Image (spheres, rainbow, N blue to C red):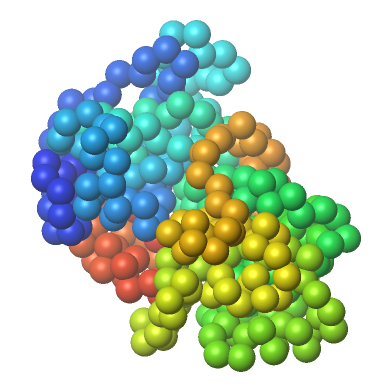
Amino acid sequence: MKALQFDRFGSPDVIALRDVPQPEPGPGQIRIAVRACGLAPADWHLVDGLLADHLPPLPRGLGLEIAGTVDALGEGVTGVRIGDRVFGPATFHGPTAGAAEYALMPAWARIPEGVTAEQAAALPMAAETAWRALDDLGVQAGELLLVHGAGTTVGEAAVRFALHRGIRVIATAGPTRAAALEEIGAQVTAYGEGMAERVSALTGGPVDRALDTAPTGGRIDRADQPSPAGGSLPTLIELTGDPDRVLTVSDFAAAAELGVRITTEIRYDQMDEFARLAGEGILVVPVARTYTLDQIQKAAELSQSRRPGGKLILVL
C-alpha cells in the first residue's frame, strides 16, 4: 500500500510517500481503508522527535485521525462489520499511521448520515481535547466561560460543546472564524492588546472560568502577531481572579509557572457521543483544504503557518 513515512527526525521535509506492507489488526483493533486523514500540529511535533524515547524505532508513520471503511477486524472486536463507515484515532506506534491507504484504529464510531469522510476525519482530536478540557476545568451550566483562541479547531469545538451544555461563552478569535462563532451563540471579541478590557466590557463582571486553546505562546492565526512571555495566561488569570479557574491545552511551561491547570490524558471513550453530536450538526470542525498524499509538503507549510483557517485533510 501507499503510506507517508519518515525514517529520521526533522522538519516535514523528511516525510516521504512509500510502498509499504499493509498493517494487520491486533486484538481489539480494526483496519480501515482510509478515505480521509486529518492533520494536526501534533503531527509535526512527532516528526520532529516528540516522544521519540517512548515509541518504537523508526521508520514511523504520520496521521493521528482518520475516517474510512472497515476492512478487517482484530480478535475480540464486536459491534462493527466489514464495510461500515467509521472515524476515530489512528494507531501511530508502528511504521505506518493514518496517512496511508490502510490504517489501524484502537477506537472508533460510525460516521453519521450526512457527514462526509473529510468532515469526520476532522473531528477526533479537536473533539476529544475540547470535551476533556471542559470536563477537567469543571465548568458548569449557567457559568460564564471565556474560550481564548476559539478560532482554532479545538477552540471552536469547545465553544460548541459548552453552548450545548448550557454554558454562556465569550470567545476570542480573529476575523476568519468570528462570524461563525457568533452565529452559533458565542459573544466574540478580538484577542491581543486590550483583550481584558474588551472582555470585561462584555461581561460586566468576572469570568467564571477560562479555557486557553491558543497555540503555545499566544499566537493564533496571524503570523505577524507578537508572542508575549507566558502567552495570554496572565490575562486569563486576571479575568477569573484565580489560576485554578484557568486551563490550557497547549502552554504547559507557562501553566507550571503560573499555577494554571493543564490536561494531558487522552481518552476516546466519548466517540459515540461525538458521532451523535456531529450527526445533529452540533459538532462541526471546519475543513479548510484537502490534499492528496503526495502534496504533504504543501499541507505542512500551510499548517505550520498557523493560519490554515480550519482543518487540513489528506484525501485518498
